[in-house]
Amino acid sequence: MGILSKQLKVTLDTFKSFKGNARGCLIVEPLWGIPYNLYVPYVSVYMVALGCTEQQIGIIASVSLFFQVFFSFISGYITDRLGRKRTSLIFDILGWSVAVLIWAVARNFYYFLFAAVINSSFRVVHTSWTCLLVEDTKPDERVHVYTWLHIAGLLAGFFAPIAGLFVKNYGVVPSMRGLYLFAFVSMTSMFFIRDSITHETRIGIIKMQNAGEFKLAETLDEYKRICVQLIKNTRTLIAFALMVLNNIQLTLRNSFLAILLTKGLGISEGTIGIFPAITSAVMLFIFLFVMPVLGKFKVTRPLSWGFILSIISNGILVLSPQGKLYIVVIATFIGAVGAAMIYPFVESMVANSIDDENRAKTMSILYVVVLGVSAPFGYIGGVLSSISARLPFVLMIATFLISLLLLAAIESVEKRKQPDASVAGTFQV
Image (cartoon, rainbow, N blue to C red):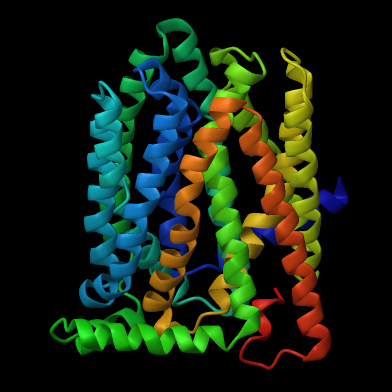
């Protein structure tokens, strides 16, 4: 217990050291995370209950990713033009507040398709909010910022079983409509509170002052210059590739896990809510008590462990017989440990590989690539799921295996050439 108390103190001390935007963004995050975690386990089940097929769900996922590519492309310019704060407020209201209202009144496939297009605009915020969160923080603090960001999300995840109680007592459709309305109130409140307690970043002020009239040719030239710089840096390309693969597996998991659990493994709809709670509990333990130790390792080591555990977890789900709840619990536990070792390190690796001066436009380029490559996998997953609910998770295993190969490539690059001071933070945390 003494060791755990010591590790917890180290973790808590990192939060106390945060100042400005990092602290402000993290404090209000549960207002978004709680409603999101309440409805997200039942999204695909809700869609099926309103008449959507697995293939239509896959189409919606792919269309969403296609529009996310568009919004990611313009996000860098918008963020530099309007500022990190203003951009985050405007597009959070559009991408989340408006979208959840549409989901709340959805009747068929076309409602979900339209809501997916509207929701895709959150990708503008993904760039602006990331800049708001990390630009005024030191590079060596960013893995801890992302750790605490996940802690905030995990604490929200403990509310997920409440949704299960509503579903069990009132049914999927009425419960989801109510949860979406709650999400509208909570998320919208969060956006305005965050806007009032954060400030525009130093780089953001400079970018707004220098932002001139939009000229497509000049904007494309700047994007081209940044792309050339990225292509020349092998280590940065590998970090970006890991994010691409991470997004593919998240797309597959978020779209088809509930279908696998209910149709493929025979788990009741009212029971689904316990799995996010298990994931939250395990990942929270890792972040609070183990992350201070993991942070001392070279980043490739915990990432390797995380990918291996994720392969094992998804392998168990693929091979699990129907109706064996305890096996799904074991798979969920192992997958949560793996996820805790993946997300903060991948995100901090990418954040530290980008210089602040070009962060907004580099992030927009990154997300265009990430989403452009990921876009077909929503449809591919839908086709696979229509054949067997287990097949999308076979594909997820493949993404983790490729990620392990990329980590081996990182080690090879590190052996050939020692990282210089400008990029050392990319692989050391």
